[in-house]
Length: 303
Ligand SMILES: [Zn+2]
Ligand SMILES: [Zn+2]
Image: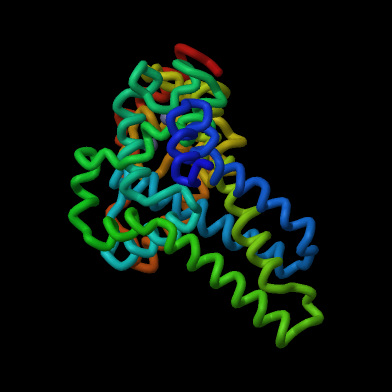
């Protein structure tokens, strides 16, 4: 009889099985989110879902994307740690892994080397397929030397499961505590974990993945960038401003991705609030020449 390790070793030799094993955490997350049907409904659970969705989308857009990947504003070492910890609780690995892959995307956008181009490969690949590919599971350290000098960021990247478990633990304790002291609220530890972690994380996955898939296929192109990036109002709504992706590819350094008041960018408004509180500073903006280009582009190619 074969031992378990022999069976796993055999499975790993086969490409299809390798993909199956790599995809199992993602499949598990989706199946686990169905737990909301077994733990019941309460308004506390809905509030937990909203808080964990908003906090983590913001940590990913402002933190992982605009700060760690593009350094579009400055902050303290403490708040940098907070952004890294909350962002990593989204179960999308750590800030160094995330930023390294994203910098690679900007360098090779929609070219053969691009790791998640829906143009070169497929929308499914750009949305989720590349994440399941083991070739992209390790960190490209040479792309994130500015981040790897912080031991606390290296720690979070290495033990990326800790922020995930800390969120699950916190939700469980709050739910169990409310159930004990205020049973009339109809909540419980397992219910808050299902709504505030599993369902919320799956939603955060798909809105984040939409930036890689949808905004390189659907939307308007204001700038003639040498990629297929687009501006999409709906993705901008779901992702708190990340849908202004063509603007962003034209000038990735800007902390603001919408260019005008009607290009709603919640992440930027929130960053302005944090700037007033002194938590972040030196927000970078689109230079005048980019606004001038946008005007010319609008004249030549009316949308
Ligand atoms: Zn892009
Ligand atoms: Zn970017």
